[in-house]
Length: 288
Image (tube, rainbow, N blue to C red; front, side, top):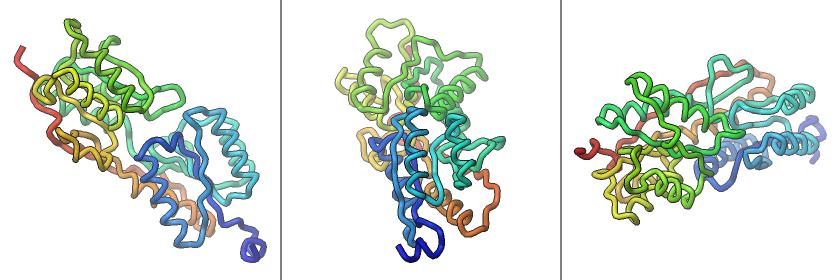
């Protein structure tokens, strides 16, 4: 308390994330905390549940508690939230997404390019009927960018993502199972030979439902995910997915906020690389 009073700082940093139910956010938050504790800062965590109005309330509550900086997820925030941070001179950085033209400091990756990359991989395997189980796009710019990336990859081959082959679901295993069952209904004219899932949790649900339906992954249908959760490589079959640098993202975001507090602020728009982890859940499409 004496240190805080002497320096006019609280030695706390706020982080506002969409959910605690996703292991990928847990990894990033752990990396943030590990970096902050080295400088004797404490992390205060809040959750938005993908609701921008609720995010504003959480940011306001953290500012009222005197946080010295703020870490947010995504680039979609209400104008009131940004004005509040700027009015209070609270340094902040956005994570989990990157844009060269971002109006605010950001440390993340290009969700559009990453999903485009893995969709192109499926096309190179020979798939032309690709379905998608996406996250809910309302309040989630990352989910929208992943859909747009898949659509772009298909368009370069003269293909399109059929509305019947795109299902939005919350990031839960059960929802992935339900969506897979709908996409793979027997006799469906648009039944895909490959399915891109907006994250690994949805992909795990899809694999489980495929096995329940008696379908072989990848002989009957290929399935890919996004995030590269630790579980992904231990599934049967191992999940082909996009590796997200969540630890480095958390560490870099925390370092940026600490630099701002120390008076070493510099504009940061840092793009971190992603890569495809090719495992056993993908193969060429079955012979028709």
